[in-house]
Structures are given as C-alpha cells and as structure tokens.
Amino acid sequence: MRNIHMIIEYDGTQFSGWQVQPNVRTVQGEIQKTLKSITGETIVIDGSGRTDAGVHALGQSATFKTDTVIPNDNLFRVLNHHLPEDITLTSLNEVSDDFHARYHAKGKHYQYRIYNAPLRSSLRRHFNWHIKSDIDVDKMLRAIPHLVGEKDFKCFMATGSSAKTTVRNVYEIDVYHEGSFIVIDFKGNGFLYNMVRNMTRLLVDVGTGKEQIENIPDIIASGDRSRIKRTAPACGLYLVEVYYDR
Amino acid sequence: MRNIHMIIEYDGTQFSGWQVQPNVRTVQGEIQKTLKSITGETIVIDGSGRTDAGVHALGQSATFKTDTVIPNDNLFRVLNHHLPEDITLTSLNEVSDDFHARYHAKGKHYQYRIYNAPLRSSLRRHFNWHIKSDIDVDKMLRAIPHLVGEKDFKCFMATGSSAKTTVRNVYEIDVYHEGSFIVIDFKGNGFLYNMVRNMTRLLVDVGTGKEQIENIPDIIASGDRSRIKRTAPACGLYLVEVYYDR
Image (cartoon, rainbow over all chains, first blue to last red; front, side, top):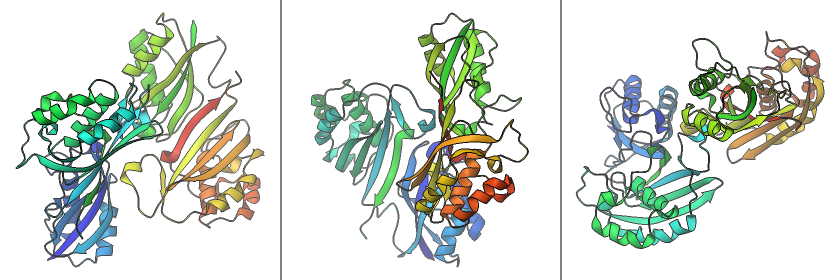
C-alpha cells in the first residue's frame, strides 16, 4: 500500500473539530468521505492530533494508506476539487511506509490571535478573540520565561482530560503587535489538551493586570487548572505547523 | 423626531444583501428588527445605497428618524449588544433634521481584494476573490488613467439595471500588493450597479493579459456591458466609506 502525507488548511468555524464523530461535521470526516468518493476505499486518516470545534489550521498534518493508483499530483488536485471549501490541502506527498503523522511528530507551532479594540469587528469575529480592555504586551513578554522549558504543565490541561505524562517542553513563546492584533506564537514538543488556550488566558490576564507575573511559578507548581480563569476561545487558535525530523 | 446617523460594519457572507426583502436575511432588515425590539417603533432606515449578497462593509452609512428618548450612547451600546454578530455599528450620532445618508452622500470609497496564489485558501474564501494566474499589477496601473474622471460608465453597469444618468466621476483608483493580496481602491462621486465589480474584472483581465489596455477607450465608448466578462465575485468587495460635506 502507498503511504500518503497531507498538509491541510481549514477554517474551523463550521466544524465540530478535527476528529470524526457520528452525526456531526468534522474535518477528518469530510476528508475521509471525499477520499472514499474518489478512491472507492474506506480510508482512515491519522492526524497529528485533534483540534477543537472552531480552531483553525494552516498546517495540520495527516497520513493515510491507500491502494489507489491515482498519481499524487492528480490525487492532490482531485481532492482539493471535491473537498468542501473550508478544507484545502496545501500539499500531498508519498512517504516511506512507516511514517505516521502523529507518532513521528516532533513538535508543533500554534498561533493565537487577539483582536484588541474597543469595538468588536463583524468581519473578524470567527478568526480572533476580541478583547476590549487595554493589554500590556510588555508584561506578557516578561511572563514568558516562566512558561518555557521542560516542565509539568498540568495546570494548563483541561479538567477531565488525561495524558500519560503532563510534562512538555515549550521551546519558545513570542508575543507581538500586528496593527490592532496581538499575536502569540507557541512552539513546543507537544501541548496538553487546551494547554495553548489556557496559557493564552493566563498571558492575557497578566497583560490586563488581572494576574501577577510573580504568581505564575506557584500556579504551575500547583498543577491546579482552577488557578486559571476560563479557557481562551477556540476561534483565535491556529495550528500553524507540525514538525518532523526528516 | 430625532435624526440618527449610523456607520455600520458587516460581514456580507450570510446576508441576501443590504435591502430589506421578504423571507430573506438582509442587513437593513436585521437592523430594523433590532431597532423595533429596542424602541418599540417601526423604523425604516435609509442606507447610503444597497450592497449585494456577499458584499462586505467597513463603513456603510444610514440614517433614521425616531421618537425614542434613549440617549445616543446607550442606543449605540444596546444596538451593538442586540445586533447579530455579523453587523457592528462603529458609530451612532444625532444629526440635523434634514441630513439623509443617501441624498447627501457626496461620494464613496470601495475596496476590492484579490487573493493571488496558486492554491485557494479556506480561511480567506469569503473575503477575497481567489485568482490562480499571475497578475501584472503594473499593467493594471497603466490601465487606470482610462477609468478615472467624469465619464459615461454605462459599459460597467449590470445589464437590466437603470440609472437617470450613467455618467459618474471616478476620482481615483489605486492598485497595490499586500503580501499575496492585490488590493484595488476605488473613490468616486458614485458608482453604477455592479460598476466596481465590473471595473475590477476588466482590470484583472488586463493584468492577466486577457484584455488589452488599448481597447479600454473603445469598450467605454461602446457602453456595451457584454464587452466585459463575468462580474468579479461579490465576496471581494468592501464598502469602505461614504463621503459627506460636513
């Protein structure tokens, strides 16, 4: 069988997340449906990880096995032609047999976008978290050293979820202005469920003065999710890239 | 009665245009419904002009008369609170009795946005016209002198529509790159129905080599809509600002 690797862009607004589930529209489900209609095969694709309802992707990564004889270039074009408009393949390549989008992922880059303005924007509502209050980006930058490195990030994991280990290595966090937007980039070897959105919430609370930088080590040490307020909304989050050693 | 002037941003994607019509969702209809629920009055708002289904606005302008005693600041906040998310008032002011958003409009600024890249983008699909082919912006710039000034622009008016006169004064057209986007700004004393989208189509055809700059004077002189290909899609068009003498 051939092993195919795809990079996928999607607008998460109208999906109940990545993972296939009965009776709801998901990114994985739509791609598998399209693959079936093109190849005739029942194909299960393996994503690098799930994304929640409303979360976007510029570079989600997934692999699948197929017996189809359709050449890669054609498969790429035909898939894009038949996929719904809110999913776009940005690349499709044949890879070695053992390569797996999730098992071989070495890290990820997420981006979180905040629209910081007194009034909401209708044109931007699905693609950013709108925050009215003034945000001090310098304060956010000063909080970053507490959030990077190899640490137990349990306090940022969604309540009720589980992971073999809650230790992750966050390589880099950057915060910057882009006009009226505040953009936060997160790069790490992996992220717990809701970790990026909860880190974003903590950083925003620091930037708006609702949380003190000095408390962060203690919040992390506590491993207590309830020390951070409500998770930042899904619509501001983008999976930008999945890293592999290749 | 008080005379109120509003500036309005909207995402045109889920509207059947500006103008109220039975059984469909329109921007005017939604604002009037919200005004009724807040003031108890049946209010008809006068927009500066219509926009088509899918066309966006950053600065649509509309006036209405009301007997409500709700102060302006409250009316502004309450309206924004109750309007659907795809409509946002960016300002609301009380104006002199005789001021009318349409009759007193002196001109308009429209912007047309093209996403020029080999692959479509799911995240941008509702907000740009995606064009795969290479576009020569320098050629578009050289075509502009033919399209500005006071002229009979009948060739750009949608077939089947009518206007007292088809003469308009286009003050300025500008074309520029913004990353992978090509942006066209149109400023004039007024635009015929579909004029901006048909001018965009002609400019794009010049930029892709499908139309020759030398033919433009003849196309304009002919007054013949069929000399230009299919209208550029609605989703790339934004009403940016309505000008008044004030």
